[in-house]
Image (cartoon, rainbow, N blue to C red; front, side, top):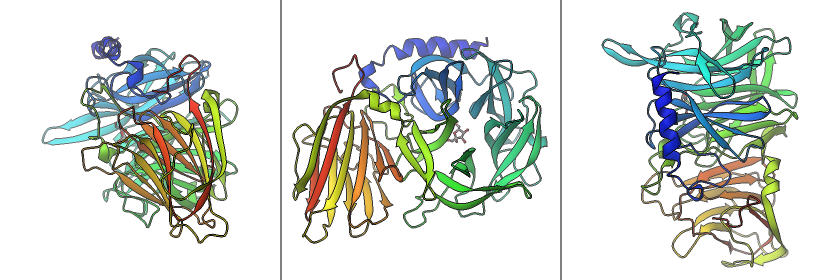
Length: 500
Ligand code: FRU
């Protein structure tokens, strides 16, 4: 094994000992130590879910990309395994960027990833190629044929400087396909398709779709799959412009729903919408579970707020989102927390038809790691309320707030008072279909995040929240009269009686 990887493995093992479990989220994956971004190689292999991730073990900032590794049997308890790749070859010396995984017929695990190296000479541009590493779920070897796709495999007009994030799958006849993000001279994303008989020797197979300029510029981390009779494309565009309340500035996540046209061999989108309307969600990728569920996981972070790190002594940065079951309903991508989460529920507290007029607390409704569902309706016989808010991760100094302005149908997440001392993005708004002032919110709170599932998963808002852990109160506020139903469970491991 190469020196650089051995060094990283020895380092991370020691460094991780300095991170107590209580300094990590309870059920969201963080890096073994140091920095994490995109989920990579999400797959079910030899009886376990494997999740790799973009990883820099030596500091809590993005730098030379390695691949970190964790395994799980329920997608909630994660066991760290040693890092599997370091940037140690001429073709990937600047980084082993994102990619995906698939099992070969002989039982080996194939990783297809982007190798990045510097062009050299006058230029300090990155050259990006696709490379393969093969392994057994623990140790992986980069193959001698690397890179398996390079600039010679690009169609006219596509750039070798932006050619990354392959997502691989197999068709029923065993053929391997992958799509890779690229862009033209104008910086507009194109998704390129390649095919292969063995996962190693690849041939260009056409363009799946081109960005017409409406959805950002370069398209990162594509994923493409069948879901409920449709074809779905998930992409994470860079440099988005907002469109009403649908997309926000900067890096975004887009779900395109459509069909594959066999004649042009292109994906024809019929509609698109944001995957997540909160602050921190990017580069989602999916897996087809052995039981047929399609589950998505994303990097629970935003490239523009990576300097929002909270405590200076925190030795990890970056979290994965909760794995989310996805389906298509009413022409949209619906998301639900993976149902295995319900096994962590303890001690349900339930209220019905509680009238909220001012700020109010309810007995037993508190906690920092909770599954909280609130159904809000206008109080009968009263004029339509203006605002309803739930405050959480609250103490005398801090709180984060979710506010629904019923007359405008706007839901806003606001972490301005969460303890941040920096002027990064702290609010996001989302337009929620107006149903006469009724809205259902399911909040999954972990120690350092909130994931909000709106109206049974029709929309989601996700944000990291670094408020001191003792802030665990929850309160309800209304401007106007509302009635709410509330159900709350603590989320705990069996052997863990403390929520924080
Ligand atoms: C997306 C991304 C990918 C790239 C990786 C590098 O977050 O920019 O396009 O492969 O991160 O770490």
